[in-house]
Length: 430
Image (cartoon, rainbow, N blue to C red):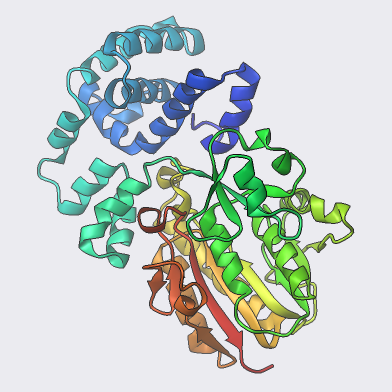
């Protein structure tokens, strides 16, 4: 589960197809993997309490088996004897007979209490944020970060929302499809995005998706991209500075054509540039493919002031997408956020340098953490006199409760989107 550092939402679809699992079996496997990843930290406190030994005494493979078994027992409607027996059988086939007795004994002890009883016992003597972290399956540092940003009454609600599976959101490629095409296919319109629709089932079942005229893209991602196009700016070249995997590039490619503009999509990683090419392939088939380049955004491959709009969707911790990548909460830490901060500052500075006077820069992250969001903008504004902030609330008035000062902050519990952040700047002089 953890050995290769893969993301569950990326590897699971291929595994389901390989094992030919569909329907209820696929749903069971999805919840087993995603739910275990989500609750890993809390299970890592329950398992040693049940076993009477520290986690460090378990082989990594055995620990993963115990986590999977604990999730079935404590959070799924699987009878405890069946969950224990299945875990013991899996231990025998994947690790060896020598660990079956240990697996059986520990999981039987886990099954002696409900999840609520375990959490109550482990919460005794802990502070409010520690108890909240345990109860909502988040590390303490994320609880602290949320408490900095949200009213106290919303913190737990926001954390709990990260533990609900995200809806499948689709986005049309402007000029190639219309939302009405998706509605006729059985989709439901998105609450806020005029390009989006909600879908139940496998998106690959839709011919529009297979043809590249529609893609999978969270509604929050659609909204922060759309907002870049709203302030007035002259037609010209647009830049997607960190374009992979390509959802925002595909939306910008269509919107730029409506403005008599063109898009350059850039990414530092060749494999991510290939994903962008796949996302915009339907435009290429119509002779309207965006220009593409593999380049380091902090060392631009273009002249300063070349663009009228620049999107800087910078690398970040991904804490805004914990619904989709539940294991990220246990793999990241405050040091990772701080390490990314310098890169985010450099990319925003390069984006400002790349835009012409009068042009627009959008700074976007899929994270609500202050060090990746408002701190980056405030530190940049403190040293640059050639930009001014465009109040984000003016750009997306149809989205309620999304203003974080002059910036935009979306939340799963408020908007049903990923926790996307965006700040928009206008270049005031060359």
